[in-house]
Image (tube, rainbow, N blue to C red):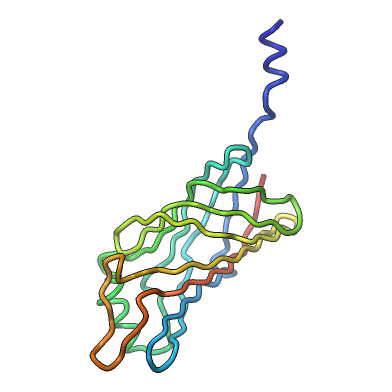
Length: 182
């Protein structure tokens, strides 16, 4: 009898939430400043799914970006970025592996959560926590976030030349839309 009472009084069953991002409705933009101007570009999401436990925050899944999709609007610069900096033949994907969602995603309306995980670029894993405002409307979720990638500190080549000096951190902005299921 005591065991039954303890089971009934125990915590409610943990609820899993899954977000499946739509690559066609997800925008990944980047900026890199140099001495003359700021370079703007994009990357394309290949696939993206995050599943997390709303009670514990434990998360899994992955968001995959094609490194070869990098586009700044300048073919020569893009070829150099892909070949020499990102080395897309050797490292074709940039991946985020979520490990924890901190905070609560409201069933409807606006929320802000932090998502912690591993950011894999150029074959090396880096811890990354992102502040992520989200909006849920029915089964659709939209999120935005941004972060810096200190690419030189993370082992990638510095494209600076004697004349042209660029910043050592690329700023990344993401707006993603997808389907949420609970």
